[in-house]
Length: 261
Ligand SMILES: [Zn+2]
Image: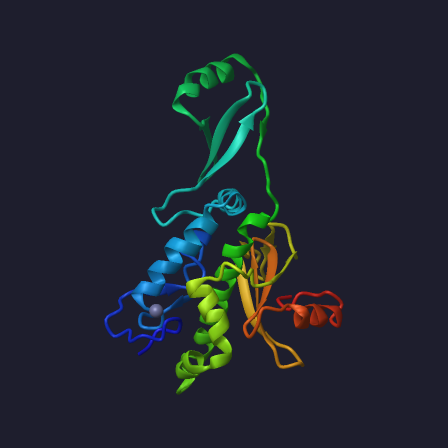
């Protein structure tokens, strides 16, 4: 077998590849070992997923949605205790939140303040969307997912993976994702389609939360887009070239509905 990114032999590779990182709550969309080699798997996790997941927006979204880290902990949410001006951390618990001062030096003052007041206000800054500075790494993250979703679709078709690996049309996105390009930010579409904490109810009356869902869109102009929703924001990226015009045309002629609806 060969790696869908670097095309090298993967017979000795041991990593399973999470299409969406486990730290975003993904436990089901996983490519078996041999599809992405250990080296590429390691590169993506260090150079793309880690910086993205630790960015202000993603850290906040993970914390507010109480998604456990790989080590089984809840990521902290930075907040401010207005009454004392002390920076605090909100950490999710199963049935609520725990709160402590951000630094040990402030902890004593914070506890005193809390003990001597009957009420208080905590403000949690909400970035609402990824920052401009995250665009480069986010576009590479989307490109990685796009190629992996294509592989996931073709994995059970004879010769399907070879097609993904040998298709020259995919090389530009493959190289952008795996090697980067300082002169390019691959364009993608980004729009909120539901609130970041929206809970849906299912037929059996249970509430569930959609953290991420995705699909491949083949437009009438024969372009292929990955369309994916993460924390209520829909992103779309073109697999064959750094342009998003075809997708904009598609949403325009479909009354702005989401392909994921
Ligand atoms: Zn590789």
